[in-house]
Image 1 (cartoon, protein in one colour):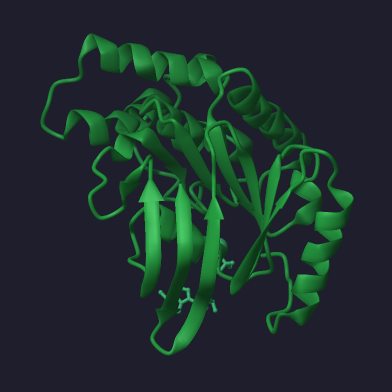
Image 2 (tube, protein in one colour):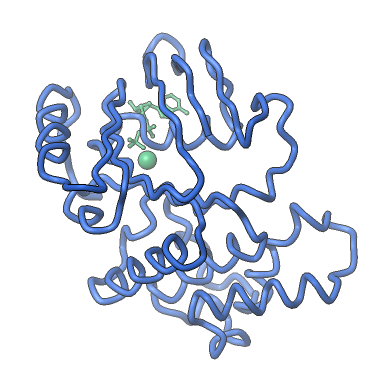
Length: 244
Ligand code: ADP
Ligand code: MG
């Protein structure tokens, strides 16, 4: 994924200005910045949901306008677990939705679809919950269901937007172990958005500090300096940093 001088505004208000970076295969990128700094806007640009006002975006070597293989890009949205708790679907059914972009809505699920969903449930550690109703699960378990849904598409790149908001500490800890496994053992490229520096310090190899502009840091050999830089960048911002 490559951004070259990308800018985006909602109306007159610039949300991102002149953002350039590249993400290589196998990277684990942490994106941090205060609330309202443009993190979700950055994610939506990566997913082709927003079109840049200026600059260019390349995905897997293709201009984003021409890119069609969106099943290669998995997405766990912000507040994924914030849905109707009476939603009448099982864990297996929700995870199966991850196959739709590949299969098309009308096609019968194939053996390959079923296998991919089973594997995703296994990796997410929720095989034992596959017949449970999603509304009956804890926040941490629901979070894993939405990760399984993204994994079911067998993505090469997985983008997660503040996936640990509203999840307890123990579930968060397990969640970071899962991400390390996806990145380390399975070689999946990860982009993890968080407004909390402390959460991602130990996991990531690259750090993006977003506050309308964005700076990228290689933190594979130490985090201290970049983290310091990010917190300075935060002081310059006009939006106070509050937890939801
Ligand atoms: P973050 O994810 O870092 O909290 P966002 O990317 O969601 O930040 O938002 C960046 C800025 O753009 C904020 O000032 C926000 O209020 C504004 N913004 C986000 N979405 C919209 C929208 N749909 N219309 C207008 N302004 C928006
Ligand atoms: Mg956001």
